[in-house]
Image (cartoon, rainbow, N blue to C red; front, side):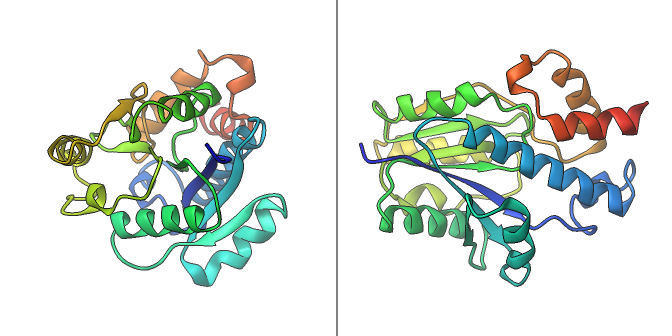
Length: 221
């Protein structure tokens, strides 16, 4: 295999983001939390051997703000318009076109993701066409591919609880083999954030997302 690439799919943090947390957090707190999630995630990736690290940013008009925050060692790609499937496929194709394989995409809102799971994803891609990280809400927090395949992004009801189930059904129809990682929580709602605070207490020290922990300690003290 060529060198693997890992890209974080992220909206540029803003006070308008994470709107479903507005019952618990003020706009400026929501922006702080988004930065904590993103920068903690990038720290995990940068510590892993052998990965090329990218952020796939949206919207394009705000990408400059993100580039300044992540620094020169993380390359920023732009997400196109369209639904989530179209955007993920575009990022995967960009990475393959510049010579990376396999490619792995993750979300920026799964701070409990262990670095070991990212290494496991690469190992699974030696055996399977695709790998997925199931999310508790029925979606997935990670997708990895040996080669771009638009079929797994077509006719999916993005944002619903059937995303992973429907995607695995597509894989089965087209004889695409797939491996699965452990199920994790992505943080969208107040209950998710409160549950995360408890989960992080159980994490191994080297995996702890430091900025996120500091934010939660200040919020919940």
